[in-house]
Length: 263
Ligand code: PEP
Image (tube, rainbow, N blue to C red; front, side):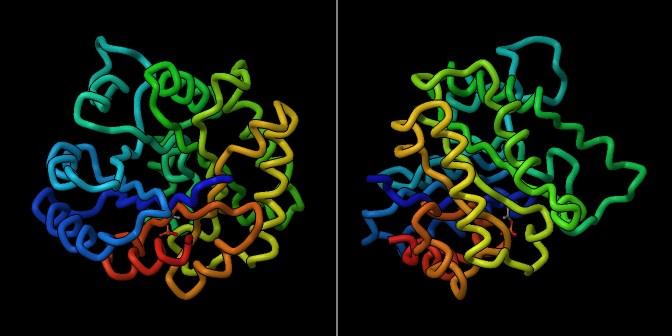
């Protein structure tokens, strides 16, 4: 039996003080919930403060990215051990925004190459997190152009096979996969429930190719404009075990309602 999981991705929002205030109101709102796993992913700079605020709760701390090397001359990067040191247990990997694949483009086309994540760097990050005993949340999903070209399944399968290359069943046990169609992220356009279920079932079938036990235990989340009004339907699908929530996780009561929908 897979426990539902809801992950809040705060992206590049909130100062440390605002992050603490959000956790305090959210904490009170979810005090009574014990059947759903909850993770919040603040910006790096707020991790220690949010970790302190989460003490005594079941809410886990996640990061939005990680670098794959242990230490060294990598200006601006943060290692898995550094994240672990401040209480991080989960980490997003391969989010479409770090891959430079935006649902709503708010940077200029000429600066897009800054967001240079590839399936190879995704693989290095997943490996590093697993080696450090942390939970990678691997994000996969197609752009609108890829969907319109009928390439959704191929894109998602390629991201899975390249992102997980060289890892075996025993190593992959903690992995969480999030299906996030790029065109649904931050746009207000949620994927049709039946289609989200179909792609999540395909992701589970991919995991089944590694082992049927892994397919049965891996949590597959849906992400892309999840709100309290659509969460219940999405989370009721047999292959959707919860959600990765961006914008709506910045509102304590909205996020609480989404978490409650996952029971
Ligand atoms: C996300 O950040 O992964 C996400 C799904 O964002 P939003 O919920 O805002 O679409």
